[in-house]
Length: 263
Image (cartoon, rainbow, N blue to C red):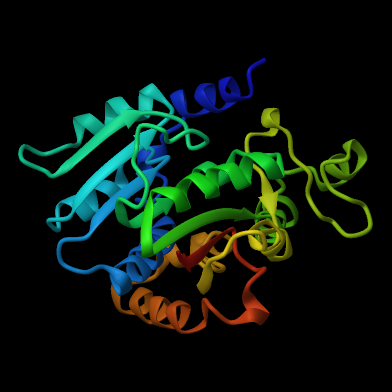
């Protein structure tokens, strides 16, 4: 089966549009937006690669920024277009993160790669996606790359919720029985990594890392508690999360991470 077919089938039957809508899911969205806003300037042009249903693209376009988006899955594009408001400065085209040849060099001030690296399994393919994102970003521009982190997912979905059979994953080789490092294939849908994998991936690129962020921290692991919080307590939790999400000692205890770097 074509590796993309697993991905297309998954997102054609999954409610991606609601993933960041819950209170616990919103922690990742609010954290990512907080860092994007840190670098946004009036008149910036934004490209989102692997835009999904457009949660970030629409949020930024509705603040007046010109956004171009690329998405692989037609189902997601249909929802993206359905949510586009009249006059909203956003466009979406179908495309693949590995080939952005329709987009010129040095064109964008902010480039978002918030989904494709979840679903690329070979280092060469990951670097190709990052290389393309760097190419289309202007010198001095800022790039945001998101990853799924293995330890946060293993603790939450495996040992905590039992949605992952940890012993079976070790038996089949999806987890190393000694280090518990993950090894995924397209049929597994998600590529699970650790920070050292990201560091190794990035060491060939002449860019400057600005932040490495545990973008949802413990929010998925403790989702029931987060969802029960009243507004005041949730804001206090966000304040805590924002204050600690770059701490190196907490970097692995997250389900998603954000690598932010300057071209």
